[in-house]
Amino acid sequence: MELRGEESLSLELAGALPAADARRHVPGRLALEETAGGVVVSLLLFQMRGLGLRGIPGPSFDYSEALWRVGIILHGQPAWFAVACDLDHPLVRTL
Image (tube, rainbow, N blue to C red):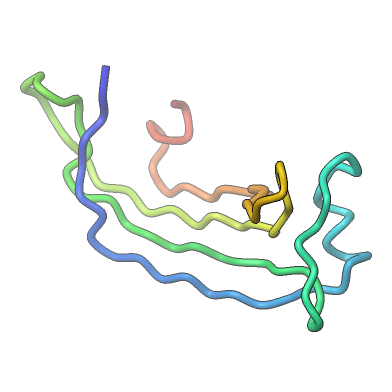
């Protein structure tokens, strides 16, 4: 089963937090991605349009998402640790 849709809008805001503040949201076994300004953080906002099952006729729907992330280092590479995901559609939250 594959979901298909179109990302119709996206916006990413980035900044930095002091390491002690970022650490409260990330498990200790993960290394934080630190810069001179602090730990990298991001808020990714986007809207999906026409989300539905690929190849199966039926209804589709739209939803918006806000993904709160903290930068980490995983296997020597920068990565994101998702702290929270806010979704505006009850079906997507259930999935």
